[in-house]
Length: 484
Image (cartoon, rainbow, N blue to C red; front, top):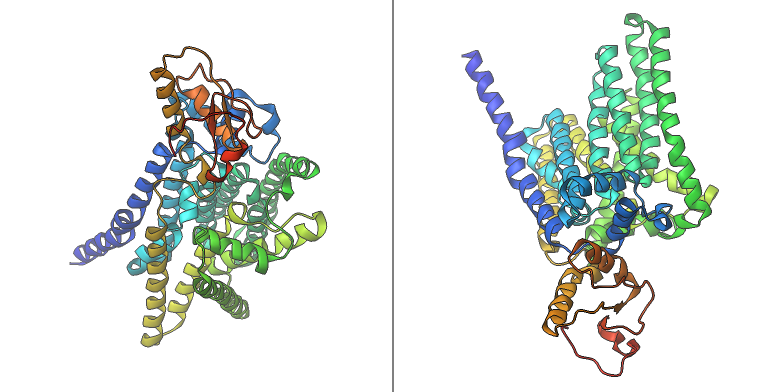
């Protein structure tokens, strides 16, 4: 009878922790990402990364566009599978798979099976995050690797872990965090925050297990791990310093602070830059600030109770991530992050919300309060799901909407050239931002007759691509409209 009971419990957990979340959350999100990765025109920034990766373009190799790990993986995928959109975006698509696996692992360890699908919706259903999992940029990679890092970090919550296992989890935490940093330099603040949390956790671990450890040996081992990690940071620091000297770190953001810059930017990014939503914006803003304030109070309460658990860890990481831009602004005049440069706040805040909810449910014995907290969880999950469904986009990216039809445009030009029986080389003049994407298709499609697209605005050419209000800028006596 006991084995039957265990079996039923296991089956229930598999259904609630894995099958339902996979079917309702991960699978539709992955299909959405794959569709976009396969069919969307290559964008401006992706195309610059392509020329860095495949053609070793030195002009942009020193720019922030060169997300080092993403560039390297684009080169590998291009060599293995060709230079199609899906091939070059594949590393980020796979990063979403890693993100989902790590998310499911974290939720499994929380041991709230009845809420797993709602927690995963909060963690996954974010339009701007799903956008970057389908683009050849470093942001999707950094999110997937960050969540893998946090998965191993949360495994350190068991104070009874043998020292060898504790060391393995620690190394895996730092390893994935380093990879996230090489995928996106904006992950530096998260990495440094994780180091602070890990050092705190090691101090408490030694305090708890002092009698059972060869302390001198293990202190040397842990110190060596952190020294190696800091050495691995040197190339990142040098690169950031170079970018600062080139004034490349001031491209995004401003100096108005977290409350006026970063948080509003994240809300509008989450809402996919929809216009005219002041009431919803205020509600989300108040909710975010309230969660952080209440979490701060709960963290202080936990300290009083001498508890340092996974809620404490994620709260400290987010708090340090929020403090870091303040020091960077004061010391280095680096603007507060906005939009995609602040994208790593999303998974960290989502995890803080999830762990805070779990803390409240575990702390209260009042059924009414527990029901209210569960209803709040379902409500937040329903809102994120509705927002995702409402903001889904099968035509264009949000950040580079102007590149939506570049592939189609070049196909039209190719058909028009064939219809006129032309065998001459042709030129295109266009708005400057379209040039990288057009040049990507020029070298990856059978368009050897197309000369490189210039990075200046409209010059004399055979074909012109412009926005609706820029026809007057075209330097031509007569024009034939191919498509509007």
